[in-house]
Amino acid sequence: MRGLTRQERRQAMHAVNTIAGGVKLLTTRLVGAEAASGDWAADGDKTLESWLGHHTGTGYGPAKSDVDMATTLEDLPALGQALEDGEVTVEHVRVTSRKYSRGSDAQKEALSSAEGQADLVHKAGRADAGAFGKQLDQDLARIDAAKLERDRDAVRRRRFVKLSDRNGGVQIDGFVDPVAGEHLRAALDAATPRPSAEDTRTPGNRRADALTAIARHALDSGDYKTGGNVRPHVMATLSASEWADWQRSGKAPTRAPGATIGDNIPLAPSEIDTLLCDCTLMRAVLDPDGQPVDLGRNKRTFTAYQRKALLLRDRHCTWPGCTMPGTYTEDHHVDEWAADNGTTSIDNGVLVCSFHHHYIHSHDITISPIQGGFQFTHPDGRLIGEHLFTRHDPPPAWAVGDDTQPHGDTYTHADKTTHADEDPTGRPPDPPPQLPLE
Image 1 (cartoon, helix red, strand yellow):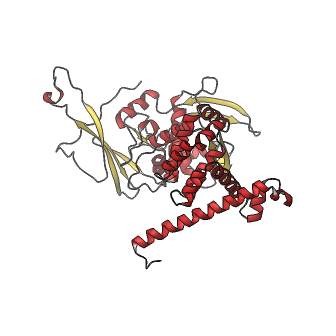
Image 2 (tube, rainbow, N blue to C red):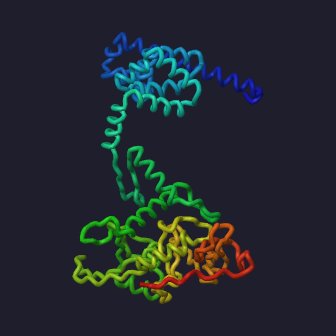
Image 3 (tube, rainbow, N blue to C red):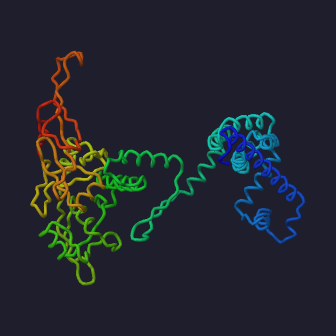
């Protein structure tokens, strides 16, 4: 085969496809003849599909496809002739058969008409099987919109989402209607920025992190109440001794950690650090049977006002090169509030996405304030990059057409992955505006 010329290979592939179409056409005619005779019932099989799957060894699924194709080509002989002539492929016929077999009487009547068959063959010959299938869906919807509505209701009845604890994690299974699916895709895309150079996550990893970010955003917004006007959050549990160790060292215990989440699922030390970085703390004293006997007060870290100020200043994840929108980020203390007595203030806070928040804690990344921004370094001092707040002067009067109105300073953001001592314009960047606390 490698000795064939380009033209010879193209001709050979076309010939093979034509032969495959002829074989499939012959198969469907044999299946149609068997169905008409009724002889298959003498072998004790319940249905023609069961008999064919058993007789050919293909199984029920492929056998049902062949039975449906036999019925379709019997009703649409022009499509069978196009398959025999090599004008359409087996996949085109399979797509048509799948939709025709599920169609309403009105749809079948329209497709089986002479005009319908001619249009079907014409469209199949001009598009690949996938694109042709979408065109056929649109045509069928125009023929019988009521069936489209019935199909939509049937799909809606099948919708579900299931979360199962499995293999040390949580497996997510589900099925939603096409509109909900588009909403989900759009939300995941919005929360999945273009990966930075150091981002080694797979696309599936990034979508999983985006889903987590969306969930955290829904919880933090306070729009969804679970009762008692309490914002729904995830609850993690630590023992008194582990909490004391964390307060002393600022790091979760690495030996035999007992912190849990959900239904007593153990938490890794780095996960504990990430959760405790910005959370609501509640003291709960339990008796030996695990019953609460004393509840302390909640202590919040960043207030809603401070969160808005961080969003105004940072806009997105401050990790160099990451563009995760700020609404899907988490608050992080530059100086840890337990280990380093860090304050809960705008100056001591940065926005980071869930992935980089966990990475900062698990890899002991240092974030240092610099003039007009923050610098990120590895534990050995190697520079990761900088997140700077760069001031831009107001545009000249000719650019805006009217200079009678005062121009306020605006702050945008430039992530630098290499060290720079000053702004490209030749002057150091100004610090961000200081917003008052509540």
